[in-house]
Structure formats: C-alpha cells, structure tokens
Image (cartoon, rainbow, N blue to C red; front, side):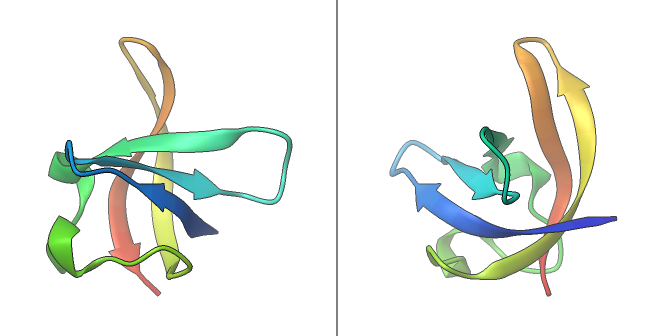
Length: 65
C-alpha cells in the first residue's frame, strides 16, 4: 500500500491525493474504506492502492493512516 496526503476534496464526491510527485492521484468516494468520504479532511494522511481507472491512474481502498 502507498501513502499520501489528501490535497483536495470536492462536494461532488471525489478528491485528489498528493504523493509527493508532480501529479496528484484521483479517487472517488466509492474507493474509501474504513470511514466515510465526508469524514475525510484535506491534509489527512491516507493509505491506498494505486489502480488504473477508465480515465487513467486512480486510488482504490483509500483509508486514513
């Protein structure tokens, strides 16, 4: 599992994870496990699995660290 920091959350049910590189990783609220999307906050540390979605790289199994 990889780790990162939530950089941005939207009211449309998706967010982006900063992994320390040039690009952020997209995630959808349906990929959150162990908590709810609404309980996540920008700046939270999370663990996740990198996956390939229909529009490119994304995060799955996103959970608070």
